[in-house]
Image (cartoon, rainbow, N blue to C red; front, top):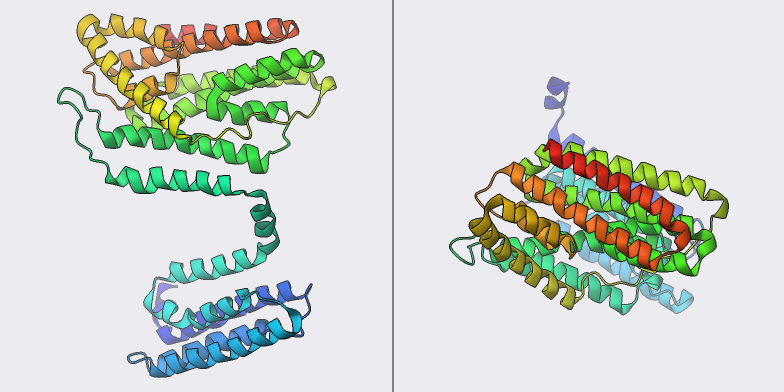
Length: 422
């Protein structure tokens, strides 16, 4: 096969590539024009194929000076301009998508000659997909408001602008924490939260309670527990659904922690991922079991977490302060009291936001063994789940107490067993 392709003249397969790519783009345009009046359309399959071939011929004839290629581009642009103004006068159609696609088709020849093969395919696929997604993109743009673009801008700024500019040198000599590591931790947490936010708002906007637990758990299992517990008290005939969703949110919390561990400390991940998989499976099984028992009362409930913006400035400030605080607190606790002090601290931290503490353990260099760090992680998770259980019992429906006690009790019990195994 390699010998066969080595004997094929390069200009031949480049010619075939330009022809096939141009034809594919033209066919996609023809499909779009089927449901529209083609009276004033610039062209479809054959026209776009000829545009691609014209670009190929004029490029091959003079590949150095590109004078003929430039003249062809000017002539094509003139024809496109005439067609465009004719459409405006007769149809009041101001769209220029077809014209832009025609110019891209004309540009395929130099792309195929000068750039890697995969880039040519990527351009063609992108053109075809975006052209076909016109209605979907229009529908999406109608759902987006100015606030969504501001939120997206915030995410791009913290991930793509601020992060690369931060120094990766330690803040203090006795700790490995750097401004870059600190901001990277916040970017990763924000990315997971932002993904959950987008799924809740645009994909599962009118989702039921179970999906609310799944997506809310990715964002914050504690916040999800608080909200679903209050809802269960307001809607007691469907209380068991809310309890099932709370248990499911715990599984998503385990998944989030495991993902963060894999990103920031792969050695630690390899040590304890089987235990996390066990806890994830147990949480999902219990949640689905409770949901199955309550299936006769199924009621779709809109998520109340939908409009929560995960990229608020005050959230970033709080996370940064907590991360720095836990970094120094962990260092001095280990230095003063050893691993015993870390164990006590981990149980205490579980009654706060554990993400900054866990990320601090994942990234920090505290001169203690990986086993001690794994133990602290599991202990913090236990106390955090106990806190959620207290929230669920005190704020939720009394009809949920048995299921919640069984669910949280089983998860905490297995977690305790894991502590003795580490």
